[in-house]
Length: 95
Image (cartoon, rainbow, N blue to C red; front, side):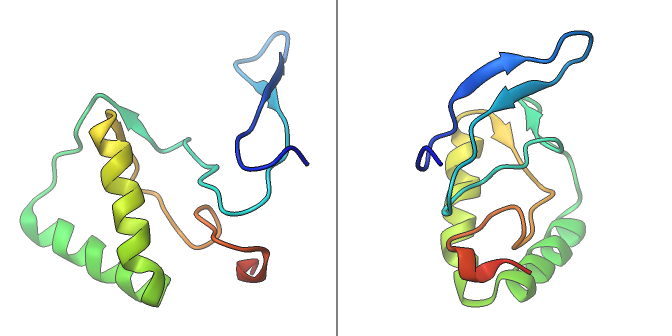
């Protein structure tokens, strides 16, 4: 294990895949649902429901997760498909 920043190893010929090193928590590994430079458009009601669902999923960790998502958005990465399994603070959060 390399640490907290994954390192690029290689591309996978014939696909759009890449090979990266394994990292230990904390991490945000799942960018498959990210929308770079395209702000998702939802009604305030949908966003409020989404926030309530994420607050319930993350519990006391939600404020920190929300800060991570805000920082990613500041860099043009909009990530909505988040769960405790793909934003993890420690190995004890494995489910």
